[in-house]
Image (cartoon, rainbow, N blue to C red; front, side, top):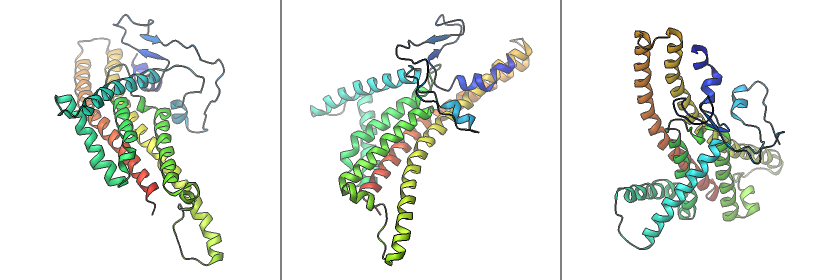
Length: 307
């Protein structure tokens, strides 16, 4: 038990995506291991794609094969999307009636919305910012919901999966490209990636294609880092939480006495440390949603107002 509690398979199993929900054995849910498996009506026996990068086992463990299986993160994402839609459709209906904000929740939500509009979108994008507010608001609250799901025991944070953060970054990338092409035209946007320089013809022919390739690589890398930044912060925080709690099981399996001084001491220290770290994780959940939204707005602003 001591080895299994701190084994990489056990620790990563509580953080990564899976085709089941895990519950404590004290709850009469699922099988003997507390696994409540999801139905798999579309799962394929042979995956469509399997990503394996030589020498990068950590990345390979986080990337699931594409086999159309239903996972817990998918269920949580749908639940978050439905909850956000219900809340904000109702809020939009109240605002449309022209009434004053009433109640703590209404005022709290409007505070978030106005902060993103006035302190994130408009400074980063400029006079075109209001057109992108629905996208930025959606990204912020969806990511926040995914982050906060990780604070609920036995659920997990969908934003701790590379597939989720990768799709979010891809959505930002497509928005950036679309915004830039809509503002300057399909050809003008790509030509505008190379800054205007007064160069001799021979030097221009040599340098400008190189600069164009560098700019395109920079554009791709920025959005890749956008995905990895969110993934790393959420994944690492939950790994530390799992390790802290796993110390209790590891020591319990070693001493085999629940009233042993070592077990009691480690349990109290682990619970105190996990509680303190959970408060930090709560702050990080809001912070990372803000950073992702701010960087998305910044990239959009750079696309519609180049150089």
